[in-house]
Image 1 (cartoon, helix red, strand yellow):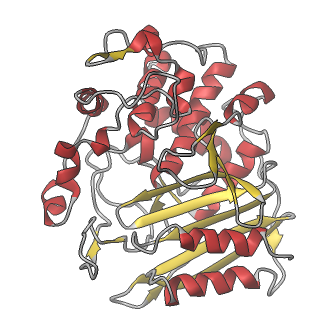
Image 2 (image 1 turned 45 degrees about the vertical axis):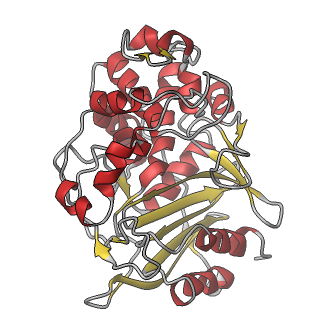
Image 3 (image 1 turned 135 degrees about the vertical axis):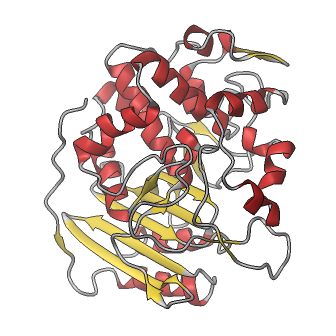
Length: 372
């Protein structure tokens, strides 16, 4: 699946074609307090880009279409795609166990890698504790302490060890519980199967075939963002009702890796999800597996969603269901959602982490619930 994939030819959208979306962008800045927001819409072979607010509030620099940003957990869609390509090549099976590929790693304290499958890693039903929720880990990411630890480097094995020190959330396959540890383990399996680094597999299987110039997985120790980018503004998880805002742009994201470490752009995200849902990255069998969902109700995750293998379906207030993934990290929240066939997509990015999910709901509803 590493052959070059041709993107659909796109033409500029007609002026005013997405006026409700532009209104929602302005609302995100003026009402929800987002520093800046950008959106790219692909629809009927046309492209529209809109923005509001600023990339840099100190200089007044406006947001632009080519900016790179940290995409957080939208990385999981890329990770799942690589795993499913290996499944299509019959190099792994989704019902293979973690123990088969990572013998002895997941055991003790209520864990048994012989009972956890690759499928359960990808649909978040493994029950494995999320390392980022461990108090001893999370405490280093709050307030001023974050600055002391933002260059900390983690190996995947360290992240798994942190997770396994805490009891499982549930038995394997019992229920959906969101955990970054699942996708760290999935990428470790990719490396075991291929003999290459996970970053190399992302590059050779997705980035180069799709020609995604703004997308990459930063190396450990690579704290900056390579190309033009907005300042990533963060409250650093402050509980203060009027928190101080910090520049969180530079940090080592080895702690997020295959669960949330990618950098990308709105254009690259719409191209990736368009190719994915358009059937140009996975055969039909693996695409069907990806889109087989589990219920997320009662898990404390995003309301009105069902989770597949690294992607999710969300039903908007108007009853329309869209597919994709989103992510949140310090100072950077993004969403890329669209129709099941990938022909109508919307990528959103906010360079702040306090305006909330309602901003994305408003933009998605303006596009998918409004007559164009």
